[in-house]
Image 1: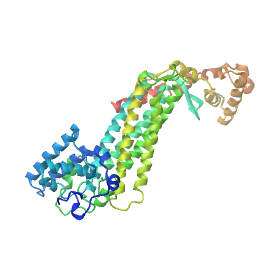
Image 2: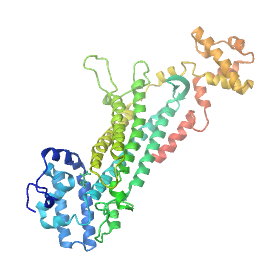
Image 3: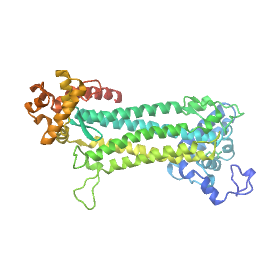
Length: 463
Ligand code: ARG
């Protein structure tokens, strides 16, 4: 066992140590050191259970507990010496424990394997990230609700095909994102609830002959229950994939808002002014104020989608149970998590700080014949025209206004009566954008009263 060239964890069967290239491809310590705190928490729970079940003596477990706390403080203090030869965080921690406490360290691995250990550590890490994402989502939602409340009745153009469609309110547009992020939040919570089964004690793949207490370790680590099939427990990475797919959908939402902010902050739109704190300048063009944070969010989401696709590729076709392929799960999830959290925080800062330009929004709201639908609806409501006919009449009036270079309210009553004899002066009352948005009182519609009701509902949900 004192062979120094072969591995101290499995050297008994090996005559020689690994080739340097083998070590390089095999090692995960370069990235899985991020699981250190979870690894030590898992080991402490496992050790306490080994003592409670009488599998190990209290004396050994006391030494293990003390030793693990020392290892944790070395890691947190930045004095821990990581070794690539020791491959991963699990073996790095155990080897250091052995240096510190000697023989009892070798008993810690009783009734477990690195396969259930890594699944447990990684789940704990992903679970923490889901909690952080929930916080980040809610902070951004609060910022959006605040924007909605301050401009619940500010008119702006609503678009389809990025062509002016109908007037909407600024508050309504902000609240649309609150709905999206609200669904993200429910996906985060669903994923968390589904993943919360503890793999520890599944051991290598088949369970163990030691009389372990899996309920005890599951509970100590905050899981709802132990996972029910040991083969599944060590080969499951659904929790990581769900994290990535929830992150992908959420990131997609962030990229849509990012794109709108890029467009809206341009000189052509001037719908919003981003704060200096969340903008950058140009080294050559003094007038520039660039929406870099929004652009980077728009771009970074690609990494998150990529991570999702990459881990799906890693997992597809893998036979049960653990395969080393699965070590490739971590970097993807780490990178996606870092970028999702950063994107959420940056978006929250941008939204909190930005100011909507009420006048520019209002000026744009009436452009592009945005109240044409209101005109058609009036023809249906007051004159009893079938909607298709009303659509046709309105189209002719839009064409007339366009050929004269004016807006719909600028046409005279006699112009209008020339197209449809029944039109009366009353029609002008529906051609204003304020009237248009106020009239859209259907549940979930853009009327300020509807927007305010939704903002209040979310306020009470978000606290
Ligand atoms: N570093 C490994 C991983 O991240 C830990 C599990 C190794 N298990 C094994 N049987 N080689 O997946």
